[in-house]
Amino acid sequence: MHVGKLFIPQLTPKEMLEAGIFGGHYFKDDISEYPKTWFKKAKLDYNKFDVNLNYFKIKSGLTMIEWKAKGWIFPDDPLGWFQWYWRYYMGRCLPEIDKVQIMRWRAFGPRHKGAIIKNCMKNDFSCRPRQRQGLLQWAYNPFF
Image (cartoon, rainbow, N blue to C red; front, side, top):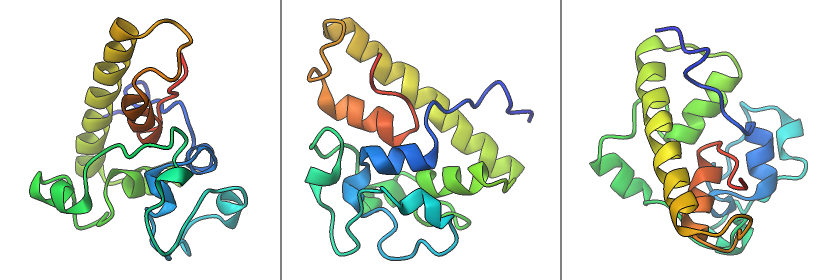
């Protein structure tokens, strides 16, 4: 599957970390495989999930237990989609997994962006903060 035009994230992993995602606790305490520069301004808490580290100061998304129950966790990326994205961004290629994760990404963004457009006034970034935080956590720009 050629993914060039199918997968064009609007945010880099570094931009996502600096904005504030997953309550700062996504990687727990293991960031050794990623570039140190990505973490200079990252909002992190190695001990616990802190909703105040999220850009919109709201919890968005399901728990790791729920991710596993839904079959969204794969052995190569036991922390989920974001871990896959980081590794993909750094050049790793696993064609079958890449296809699945890119299709998940493509399904997420338009659905949530559409709900925001339908229900919020333009430039009202306080409207639907949970969906905006979700978009941010999937490498979509939540400000449109």
